[in-house]
Image (cartoon, rainbow, N blue to C red):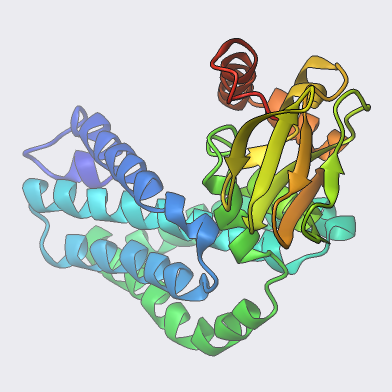
Length: 299
């Protein structure tokens, strides 16, 4: 309706305005990738609400084609941030047992909201005119942001997503391509385990049942009694046995007091094999450790 009512745009302008929103969504999505590692998400949700509503207000106040296109890029970016922060916050505060049901209810409410909004929007345009209707509807979201600020801030305190674990997973190449939801699920599945110096973590030849991510300390990797390498915080081992279905290819022993995160085989495989980019990254790591220099062959 905005495009058709603007002489400089006309009907072809519908595509231009939609492209502006789409471009903004791409920008916002790229900018919001780091939200997976944020401990407080409510400020970004509030920012998304404001960034979605304010451009609509200014489009109503300044009905110029170039201004409308620029503001819709901002709106698209805010929309992406709002969605990512909102869904991440929701999934982080809702237990796994009821999460699917809650998301289903949310999708139903969104659909109902779109339908009601279409009816109310048509009434407002008929009563107030297009530009006044844009100003009124755009102002609703910033007002809503003010009202929701405190309740949403309290939600941050209830986050059950282990942020530091999610950040650690993001540092592993094969986990980096995973979605926010999958990363958070894996972060919640990590089990912290401590080993004393010289204690064996995995043994060459045994069946593999877990993947390990080093949090602190150093481990020594040996094969047939020969040292291959030392590994430290941020590095990982155990993927070869899981991805290839073979016994452990090396022994890993704590060289000092070590803390690792243990990820069970089922969780590891469902995440890595369920994402083409992660599967490729995992295969690359396995190939490098099997075919590469002798020092790159841990477990």
